[in-house]
Length: 463
Ligand SMILES: Cc1ncc(COP(=O)(O)O)c(C=O)c1O
Image (cartoon, rainbow, N blue to C red; front, side, top):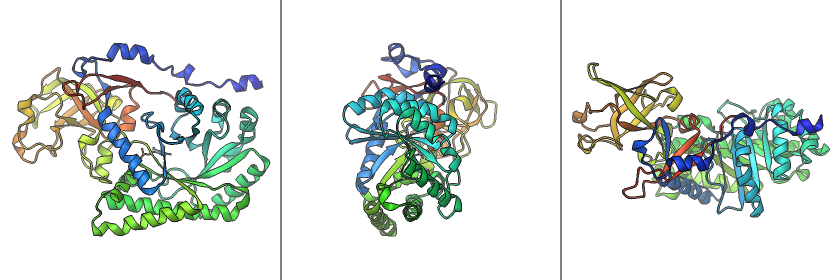
């Protein structure tokens, strides 16, 4: 019975990943223009800049970064001593397994946080991974006492206590506990008793500012970050009054989301006086928190970005900062409609059905693939072609006029051809990326070879 429990059913069986080598043999060296579509394309040049920017943001505040891997498996921490991730599925940890074992051999401290409040049935798979990766490598989020029902079993299976972050709700209302609630006090008391019995180890508190996607300026995003920090600090002080302080190590406080994490860029720039108050308040708050706790920043979609992130205006971004495009083809033209429309073979199963508050469509068509006569027409903004994905169903996308593309109206309607390949910036890269088994990688720094596939990155699918 115990042996059977130790053999968890993982992605190797449920969602076998395609062979990277075979994919690379098939795609490397070929032009995007000649490939079957829809396909997900990442521009490595853009992605690297976005990654460095986030590292600079963390350095500005002297805090560490815990990237969320759900959309990519990047920033594994080449330069940092710790390798810390949040994941959205256990499949991602299983996919990262070999990389993590290698990092461990290089002497790095590994910690992977499963990013949903723990479903008890996940314990067997997590315990098997913890056993293989070693002590303190797997952490979980908890916001209900019953999620710890399996902690004793985790200890038996893995030989180590369950590493726990308590999930705090600082305003998003998706998951987590309000730190003023009785539920939070009860959870702390319970965790304390399990810690004494040896099945649990409290690592820290985690909140997530998903509601900061509602920001409309850098200052608003900074304000979301300040609120999150204040709230988590309050929760942490409550925790150490309820718990026996001496018994617990320094707690880690984890805050973030791409808009709030991006807003830190203001610290690195000449800040207009209207914003300098928020910026210096942030610096003071962070250094106060760092005295008593270990502060870390988490973020996920920042290396790739998308139309939703541009809409938050948390930092000055344009479509040229978006690393993911969905490659697709024009299937048909409807010039008789008023205004004219076109059909592409990319609907909700290629782009997602995610809204974007800055416009009513589901993706913006870039000017890639348009003849130069078209791309010089009018006064175009941000490499936008003049078309957007206005309506979608499962595999159909209807291209309609993108009213934001031109400063002057004279550039539209634009000619499209059946069979023309186009690239689309999706509204939410995490959802669009999840529709594909792998990314085709290009590098726009390679002059004359901008459309050549230079690599293929396989995603981990399933849960
Ligand atoms: C728990 C958790 N942490 C971090 C992230 C990363 O957020 P973002 O992609 O906004 O940076 C997510 C994203 O959904 C999440 O669910």
